Each structure stands twice: as structure tokens, then as C-alpha cells.
Amino acid sequence: MLYITGTMKIDAPAFTGTPVHDKRSRNKLVLGAMGFLCGILVTSTGRFLADYHGPWGIRLGLVLAPWALVGLLAVFSRRLYQADELEALINRQALAFAFYAALFGLVVVHQLQSAGFVAVFAWTTPQLIMGMVLLMAAGILWSKRRYI
Amino acid sequence: MKNRLKELRAEKDWSQGELAERLEVSRQTINAIETEKYDPSLPLAFKIAKLFKQPIEEIFEA
Image (cartoon, rainbow over all chains, first blue to last red; front, side):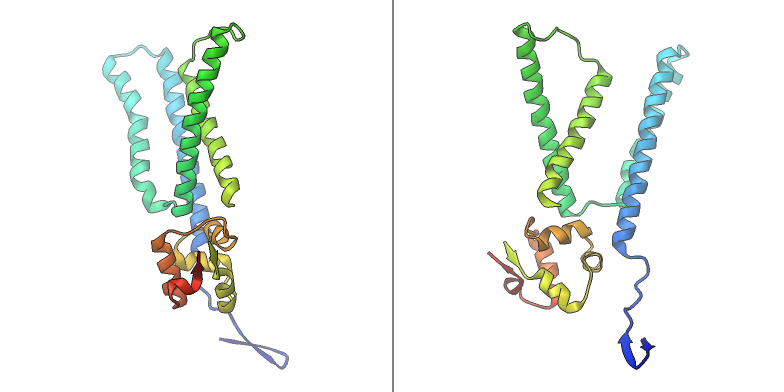
């Protein structure tokens, strides 16, 4: 296709529809939002179950139902979005970072507790989950700065 | 690893996004390769060579 502007003829760029990289970004956001909603659902169910004392079958069903949804999301997430090789590398490095930061962090906390600088406290499950999420996020940021 | 990706892309008048689309990777990956912060895997390097119809050693240099 040619556009005529005054006396100049300029080749128009071929229209390729929605670029895939835009679709990738959009799908990544959609997947993130769905993951976030699943997180809220799992957390809400947990809070509800803390005060619910119904039959064990219903309680077990309520525990497993959100995870069935998470499982479905995990299975179909590949159709929506698949990390490319650099993103996969960043995720692996973030996981390694999170693991070693947690390991060394816990050892340091234990030593400080043994030496009497820090009060002995029990880690609760929500604290550990939040710690893991924060460490993973920090790992992604730490790894990304090398490449992007 | 040095590479001529930016130069080859400029010859084709493609944006980083367009090249990313053709290679089925993210734009960030193309940017990281061009700025030599990231060395692509062998399959991706072959894909790049095939796309630009050049031998791999003409694009990447140790």
C-alpha cells in the first residue's frame, strides 16, 4: 500500500493486527489478576473456615474447592501466557535468591535469639507465607536489574 | 557476547516489539540481547539467524 503525501510516495508499514508483545503483556496482566483473585479466594476461605464448625465433609470440601480452581488456572495458564527464556531465567534466579535469603536469614535470626539480642518467637504460617512472597518479589527485582 | 542484532533489526526497519513478535519472545528479551546483557539460548540464536537469513556466526561473536 502506498500513501501519497505531496510529491513523496512512502511505503506504508504492513498492518499486522495486535502485536503479540502487546497480547503477551495483556495476558500476563490477566493471569496475574486471576492469580491474585485466587489468592483472595483461598485466604477468604481460610478465614471463613477458622470460625466454621460444620460437618467435616463440608469443611474438607471448602478447603479443597479453591485449590481446584488454582489447579485449573495452573493447567490453563500456559494457553494464556508462557514465560520466554529470559523470564524463565529471572524466575529461577529469583527462586534461588528467595531460598538462600530465607535460609541465611533464619540462621541469623536463630543466632541472634541464641545470643539474647532478639526475643524468641514462633513463626506463624501467615508470617512465613508473607515472607516467602516478599522474598520472591525481592528476588525478581534483584534478578531483573541485571538484564532489564 | 557481541552481536549485530540491533544493526540487523535497523536494516529491516523493525521495532524491538516487532522483532519480539516474530521471535515469539518478550520485548525485554530483545532489548537485553541487543544491549548484550543477556546471551540467547542456542535455539533462540538459531531462530534469529533463520529470521535474518544469515549464518549464526555472522550475528553472534564471542
